[in-house]
Image (cartoon, rainbow, N blue to C red):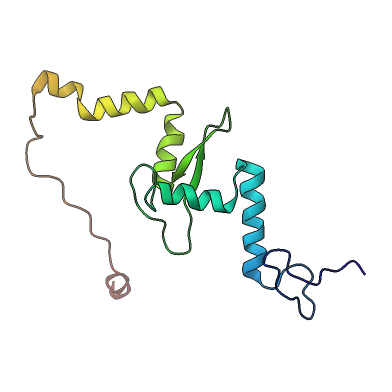
Length: 143
């Protein structure tokens, strides 16, 4: 008989038609483990250690993961070097920059904008634009 007698993830007893995992959660956790190991060469425990090292949040903005979600493993796509864990928005920004040089230039641009050297800290005339209000479903229904 080639079937497992214990869960391949947690070691718990298998019942009925269960072949490898005792629950959908164990199946999901095993898939996560395999993905982390095959894609990034880290274990789930190392992922947790990295998150702890970052203070429990994104390596850039510090925002903690949303309930039921995890931060992305940020890595150099050329070398595979794992840098840390990033929230969706910060990961998107880093991916868009492509190189550390672009990130450094972006930081310099934001902290010392070229327009400031020409016109100083002048603010655009008028008041700031109003935020557009979304039409509520109720307003749409009455029209």
